[in-house]
Length: 71
Ligand SMILES: [Zn+2]
Ligand SMILES: [Zn+2]
Image 1 (spheres, rainbow, N blue to C red):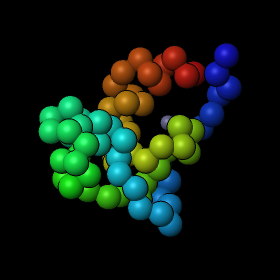
Image 2: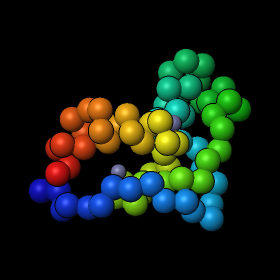
Image 3: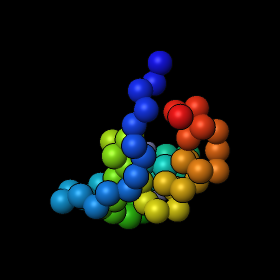
């Protein structure tokens, strides 16, 4: 069972790559390519503890059943 956690984007002190964008780039051109082209961002979802850029956060949390399953 998933515990209900709060999913919200939070600005962090650290820079990271959006995991969704990164995966997408890996699929397109491999890991080296992904590391070169995925821009670094500072926003992270508190609930997932994963870096997300704004568009990917909304895609994964509101426009798919991913979010519904967690609730
Ligand atoms: Zn992204
Ligand atoms: Zn989340």
